[in-house]
Image (cartoon, rainbow, N blue to C red; front, side):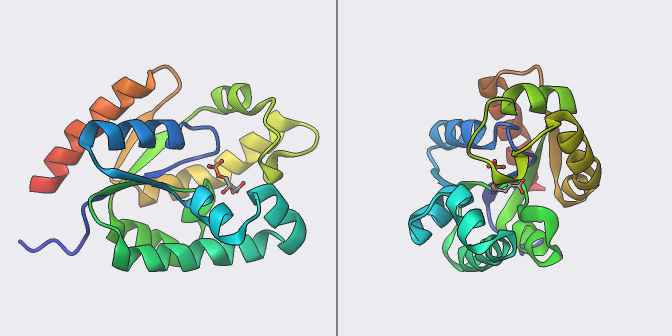
Length: 178
Ligand code: S3P
């Protein structure tokens, strides 16, 4: 059977779910290149995500995400890609993420997310009061979208990054020969 998808590992999930940490580890263990869409956008725009939201707004950032993921379809293979937590929100992005390869949803509970994000100053969507309510509402909306986009999901609350990476690699290898 000819597979129309590429062989990347694509990590999706909410802010603070460990995409960057697990992604870098996966790349090291597999000897793959590692990319992070937030970092790529920041480098290109010469601004932090926070500054970009401030100066041009969220919609503009979402456009940049879609443009980037479109480009990656033609340039990326056998790499690990960590994506911003909002990347799968657009339907066109979901399709492109799936084409890029094996999509893994790093799942976190509201409580674990809040614990990890409590002192974060870099994420514009988490500024303000009532972090727990905000995270709860966002996760309620987003969890079904992450689920529907993923080939595999793994709850990251209680597992160490290395163990998560090992489990993903096992599933990725099965997926490759399926
Ligand atoms: C966002 C997640 C962030 C970043 C931006 C918006 C989101 O990435 O793209 O702040 O909408 O969930 P991380 O998931 O890497 O924090």
